[in-house]
Amino acid sequence: MPHDSNPALSHLARIGRTRLAHTPTPLIPAPRLAAGISAEVDISVKADAWTGLGLGGNKVRKLEYELDPARLRGVTHLITAGGPHSNHCRVTAAAAAHLGFGCSLVVNGAPEDPGRGNPRLHRLLGARIVTVADKVDRTPGMEDEARRIGAAGGRALVVPVGASTPRGALGYVHSLVEMHEQSGGDRRPPPWIFTSSSSGGTMAGLILGCAILGWKAQLVGVSPDEPAATILKKAGDIALGAARMLDESGSGPNGADLGLAGRVRRATAAVFTTDDFVGPGYGRSTPDGKAAIDLFATRAGVILDPVYTGKAAAAMIAWIRKGKVPAGSRVIFVHTGGHPAHFR
Ligand SMILES: Cc1ncc(COP(=O)(O)O)c(C=O)c1O
Image 1 (cartoon, rainbow, N blue to C red):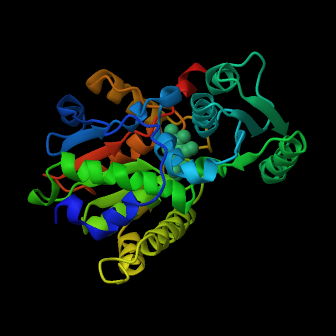
Image 2 (cartoon, rainbow, N blue to C red):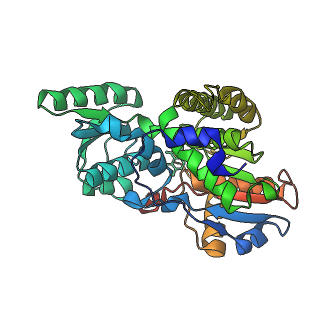
């Protein structure tokens, strides 16, 4: 079915969105990278690291829906939270600067001062940094900050951590639709798609996109931190919430339910996730992650990051070399960004 006559995509088009990302991002063939891994596969890189705003990455697509113009009415400030090196905090601060809002970032763990990498960029983008001791203090910290802004006559919109909400995940449906189009649609066998998956919003959007298009791409989510079952559960739940949003966002041609929830459940059941590449823990590098970063750099000119995409690429390489990805397959690696981590 052509995309413009897909009912679920028509529903998606009715949901408010603030354009922030430079899209469609390119799907870049990487024949030298493929040759360095195995001559038997065809690899392309979906360049979502290049979504532009504030050095880009996957979070920009999610923010487009979190920052629905209807939700921004009367808003003076954006608030979000993350670790001191958060990519999500960086692009939220960039969106605030672009749209003319103040921005507060509630960060667990003191960032170094003057700071390098993302902490430096958080400040450069004009954000106010509020430090809390622990991850569990982030939500109360954001609530306190919203109250403080309210007491001063402003109004804050709180963007949840990672923008990994059903609303945010809608941004990733677009990435999936782009990949479908760019890789030959239903005229060619569906590819394997590898992505880093942590708070689940990116994978949720990819799942929902596959459900909407009826595309049997084999999704693989690679964890940088939590157990594989946890990341799959998070992504599946978010995808279901996003499907319900689409079901409710229009009544269909004859008031018909689009039936997306069932399709999302089936698409989620077909997803593979792995936590075999986490190594010693979140943000701690691994030898195979480093090797993957070297291979992408020297054979494709693509800079991955050590926290998320390096480990996801290590998984892709291992799965291809072990034959888990069958010879003759097409593979898409979703480059979700994160390169400021090289400058920590
Ligand atoms: C560079 C990068 N890649 C991947 C991810 C994981 O995406 P998600 O949180 O949507 O699962 C993140 C999340 O922080 C990220 O910053």
